[in-house]
View 1 (cartoon, rainbow, N blue to C red):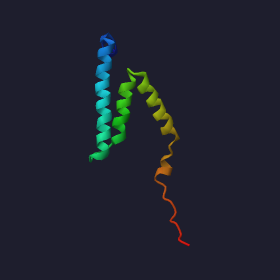
View 2 (cartoon, rainbow, N blue to C red):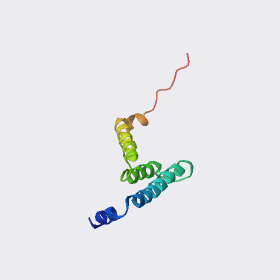
View 3 (cartoon, rainbow, N blue to C red):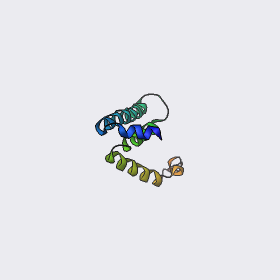
View 4 (tube, rainbow, N blue to C red):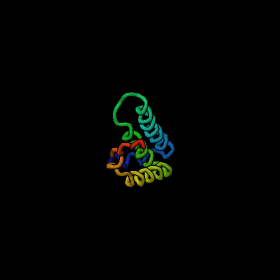
Length: 88
């Protein structure tokens, strides 16, 4: 609880700058892990959005949209094998 009070005492432009740097760093790291060998790409991107949503409304909207699309995704369909095509 003490951290929240201290965080709110920091001037808003400085808070936004700190949040922007941390959030974008996490998102860029997640993006780099797509091409570089490494585990867990998506959690870094989501964590970056969560950090950004703490101070920015636009990031909160993107996070809500991502949650909405994640609820619609059915993991069983992602790994379902398609039947082989028969050549006639």
